Length: 315
Image (cartoon, rainbow, N blue to C red; front, side, top):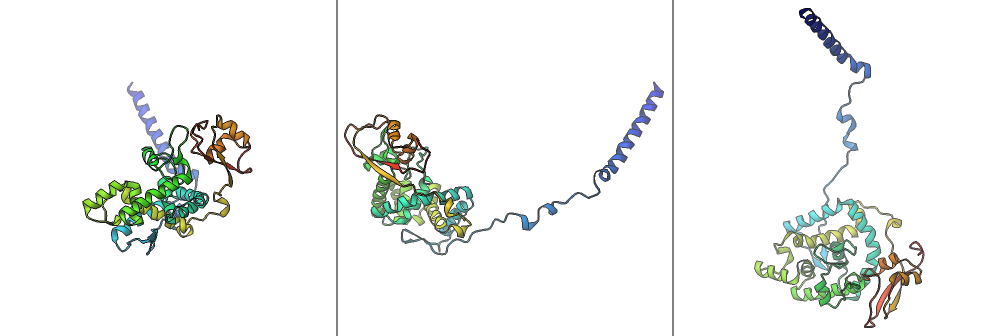
């Protein structure tokens, strides 16, 4: 037993020596080159450069001067321009979509005597999509059900005119004109669009000021007008902010014809097929149609848009 232990110890020593010698020699066996240092793979010239953006020295909203001489105002605008410039995917989509939808919104703003800059409010509200918020606000202009009905829009289970761009733009214009009359400026009206007339009025009285830029507000409303300003600046000057989009990559307006319907439609899928389009295409251009049929016992006139052929798959 004692002799075997000596032999075992000797064998172990020999084995360790072999491993040690092999460990020293193995790098030469694998390669004669020394391991590369990190700087050989990551040169400064190859790294992504993220730079601070110089914000405009002068800006207006709806013809009203933005007081950029105020440090707080300047830094709040600085934040929104940086956040939206470096959110590349979102801003690229906004540039593409704005090419399609601004061509529809701009004449409506002119028709309802609303400054052109309010098209950027629609971008801030919905991203130019017919979305529904967690609170229940819907459409490009994000109206709550009660407000929509107050201003005369039809909202029920089969028709929701918050999703009708022309009608909803008319209501947005009416609401903003009312706010402008109440608060004196378009900037205050824009803030009230987010916080409500009662909310802005309460804070103005509490803080003894009549300017949005002097109000201490919750984070959402405090950022709201500056988000609109950032969208205006970037969408008006995309290449200045590093966005280069070919004309062919922009989403184009799709020509449509309008049908006036004053009777019920019992089957919208069958109706779409009669017009040579699919049910999906019908709903894309008429998102205010919320069910599979149109109930119209009163004989109300509805205006249904039918896209011209060649823009979608056939029915």
